[in-house]
Image 1: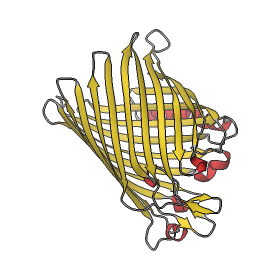
Image 2: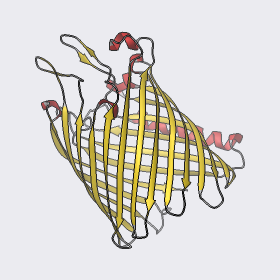
Image 3: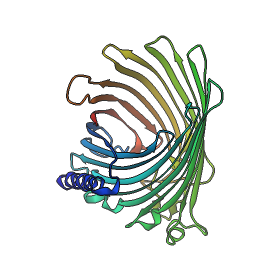
Image 4: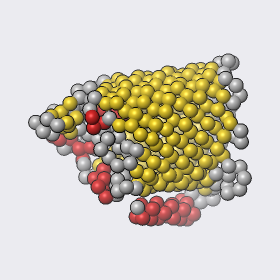
Length: 366
């Protein structure tokens, strides 16, 4: 825990030295520091694991060069977390990036592109999941008339796992969204996402038992709607469907059931959310919401006593969040508080769980 904190402080000092020794000379440095804490009943989503509290720290530093219509932004981000109850989930991540922005003077259109390099290091048991990452993107936003917005991005991520080369992957992905605003305070939108992962290391076909490069692809579509009830209250919700276009790679023998690191590409199904947002007194935003998800892992097998079994989960959630900007002293920090209850009903006992979660954070900007 102390090592993680030392690492992020060291990175902060080195980054500040870099900015101050001419890398971005004569430019204004802006930053955000966020200190947070929280509690998770099931940090990894498995029933047989200890609950844990955690601390988190995020530092962002950036400087912008150029005019408003055409700008270059250079930045650093450091993330660190420390978990209790001997869960070994703590980690530290450092990222350096550059972004280019071009905006029309009337605000009707904008373009941006960026590149970022990151390294993430875990502590104790999870150090085998340490990785390095390169990320690039291109994004656009354009108003089609007064009340219609089109925006989207295309991105490419490469993540390399040193101790687990079979997990190394290349991920092209993108998203396109159309939003419509009406005079009746109604906003509707439709977003489509498409992504794929290619496990590119030469050992991957041997490990996952494929004749070609192991891969998985997925399509998702989300419909969202928001309705303003008054100047202070709005209702909002969304419904998203996800479809796997190819099976998730895996290795299966008589007593081994293994696959790459499980993530959103591993299951398909649908998710829904409904909530109310209220601007309370003292410029405090409150949001109350409920969610439901149905996740089917298809033909992917999970180890159970006596063999392997398929898995389908139903996830229920209820959450309350608060967002308030403190406007008196201490640099006007922003305070956020959120908490809720999550319940997962699974066809496999090892993934049946329920319990609370909570988090709080305080952010300073300069």
